[in-house]
Image (cartoon, rainbow, N blue to C red; front, side):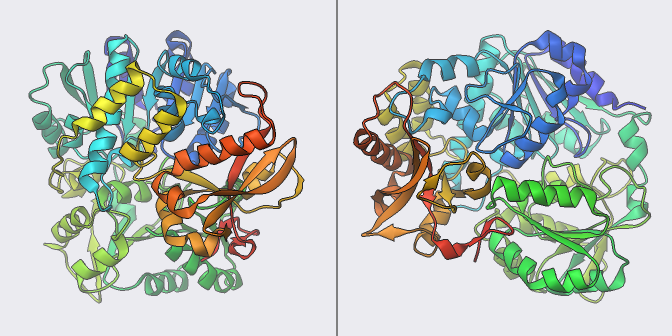
Length: 598
């Protein structure tokens, strides 16, 4: 049997300018061109954009046999060409790298004295584009200026889609868990023909909500795809008979101990909203679980790419394992578990997490999903677990709705939810959960759109462009703040290519704001930076910490310009100086597991 919705998607690509595929987790969205060589050859050049570096690495490895496949992200993928200017026929890239190139700022040269700005701009805008896992970048997070940040992201995504439609190139948007009201925001009104394909029965509440939200957009069509002959439907139609969902009014430690004590050795996935709590629990339980016969791994976004690769290899081959993880593995990574224990989160995140359970089908008997609320006082518990990471209002709305008719017994509620397949008969499924939260109201911020137009049409010089990105967009097109590298490896030695994957860790500006004095080497209020010059790794004095926090990209660019003059680098010629990252203190790095300690 085939995944029939992918065939319908292929047909729609021939007919429409913009195609939005709302398909279940694990359906095969990301690799659909891999299975359609005819369409792959006919389309020509494609840029496949994903939100996380870990997903970029995995997809690039999986589809490298297509032929001319490349990638661009701050990682090293073996046997796949790195293509900084996105020149491969099929390029897999992070949203960060793609958007900098799209607006004429070559991400691979961002700290160089001279840019090939026109090359980055032209190549990124002359390809078809796939915007994958779009919910991870368009969903409001729990940040202080949620309205401002949300409007920024929406403007950027809408601007990208509008460009490709206007010049006659295809835009394909993939998601499993987009709130129905969000579709109205990301689709520009001045766009060609749009087809939205929803994998659900026609009368499903989610289909009705999507249609209601686009009713004033004459160029947009919504199509419900539903077939009882579809391979995915046949695999998961009996999902609720085999997969139980439990809501717990207690701490995660209690639930983990109960699960480990009551089950034979299986594949257990323990997911946290916070990197700090993830590391704390991993360090607390690692030895205890190993004594019980489990392999143990940890995966989160604040690790080196080499450590993450080793952990994923361990997860793939071990039959009895407990994995402690964060959002870094909740989407796009093709791994399968028998039991999930997760901190409570908004529905778009829970859908992705639950998609790692029985991912390939109901083949191992009983499966379990345990959602930890963290206490009997639901509001306080949800705020504690979600604060600073997710929108607590959205999470609370869904939890309260689920608990209305729940039978609560011994601090636990059993709720029937099909996390993999929309349902005509069961009360709750993953798409219905997305219909619960009300719309997040946003204000119009004209300065964001005008700045994007300026980058597109006026093309300011390097320093001016970076300064305005810092001032107007907090250093990032789609994040709350800029993403910077921390270098944890040796200095005053010969540079080796493996240092990039073994010792560099991406962190947000917010992390630096909260942890700079604990993690970074600072002298006279200046952070230290690690660079390579003529094949040698050295430490140099960087910008003032206060300047870095206010102008993250600009302050590093200015400092590197001074260092280049010191090493007599000629602008436009071969670079003598390359930035590796902000220098970490020696004691903060766990080299065995590749992460910054807490």
